Amino acid sequence: MLRRPAFFLASTLLLGLSVVWFRPGPTVLIGGDAGCYARVGRELAERPAKDWLELTLAHAPFFEHPPLGLWVNGVVVSWFGPRPEPLVWLTRLYATLTLLVLAAAAAQVVSRRGTLTDALDGPTLAGFTVLGALALPGFLYESQVAMLEAPLSLALAVGLWAIAGMLSASTLSDDVFPRVAVAVFALAMAGGFWVKGPPVLVLVGVVLVAVVSGWLRWRWALAAIGAGLVLTLATALAFDALRESRGLPPFFSTYLSKQVLASVREGRHNPEPSPFFFVRPTLSWYGPAVGALVVAGLAVGLRRRLARWLPRLRVEALVLGAALWLGVIVGFSIPVQKYQWYVHPGLVGAALLVGGVLALLPARLDRLLTVAALVAALAWPFVRFVPWESRMSETQRQIAALQAATGPRRGDAIADCSPMDWWVSGHLMGFLWDATRVDCEQPAVWRFDGHSVAAHGMTPPAE
Image 1 (cartoon, rainbow, N blue to C red):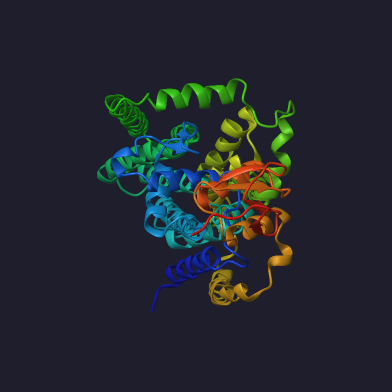
Image 2: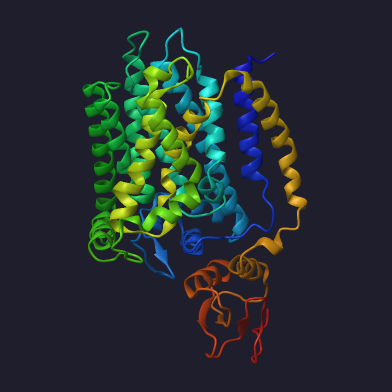
């Protein structure tokens, strides 16, 4: 029979798998840029692999994001065709791996920093961290959105695991494992940068917080940060050199100058002078984390007085989780005032923070929580039979209608007479059929009214 902590962790992971993979309603490419990234993947899939050095959107060079996540999209589309479902399944796979790595990171914190007298073991904190992720509306949303935040979150989770592995051991001196953690940290930094760019640098801030807190030696911190920066720079320069050898312009220098720096200087979305611009979306997507931050602050500040009542307090988990979560919001989202979904990469830290606070619950509740998680995991798949269409937003209904349409072919023009945003509808049409979106009043063979795609006053081309 499994030990009680291991069974608790297994039940929470089973609940996570159930919630991530069984969803009500149709599988749609929600998110403003989901159709855009899917379209980039389709255009990659239609070219030989030797031509994948060039990313294109609507058959024009695309420099807005690094290529790694889009290459994976291209592989998925080449295997399964230009259908929305495989790309959403890919996102669910990212979310599943993120939960697994988060659990491993939480367990690693206890393994490195725990003592023989600790009331909190690794599997228990890992299980609470999984529950922490499932308590976040941001994670539940992002686990179904085929954009680049999901693979970035996975890279950040791997980086967090590596940081936990570099922490100074409380009970023994182990310098072998930190070497592995340094290498994994470098890979996580490079991988995250190749997916989404600068937000991955929040890992550097988390490392420095661990050093200042006295949990991580400077030599490991400098080795990890240096290895990460060197690997990221070396791979970026090698990629640009390879592109130039094929007659293509450099990618990363163009991306950094025209996308990243322009975004910081002048390309802000919805610029707001108030620093409280992100209060509402943060509460909406991360309400439990905000509450957990308050509780964690009180618990850490009063830990000596409350030690008797909080035997399972794990300060490292609370501080590292808060550092990663707040690092994304304060260090990236607020300065460039991006749209609200740009706070989502912080969900990795928020999950560890919420999990660390949930672990403060009395140990006698663990068995009850194990049973509740197991029952919920077995019951959740029946959510598929719930009529969900009435709760979909108007945009989601229009996306579902567009995805279910048949008729258009490559190169066809579709008059968009729907109220959907042109960016969303245009790229979905490009992904599904490589069709061209035109305004409603322009002549076109096909017409989309928000409910269906139908022939419109012109004879559709023969099959």
